[in-house]
Length: 68
Image (cartoon, rainbow, N blue to C red; front, side, top):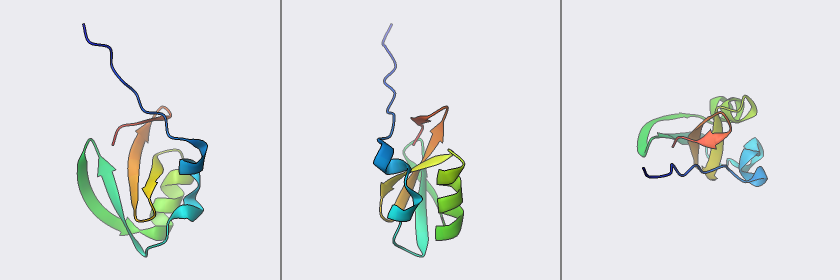
């Protein structure tokens, strides 16, 4: 049985202030689902639902690891 790899974002990727664009890409399981507002993306990061991938994209999180 193959061991499942889990990516745990670095501490710096949990900083919502790293987002720089007004619209932010939201990634989940390798698919960009939608563009959301910067404020909504920052709130998702604060709530532990997402992490910063780049200054214009966030990835989904579950139980502290990436599901993006």
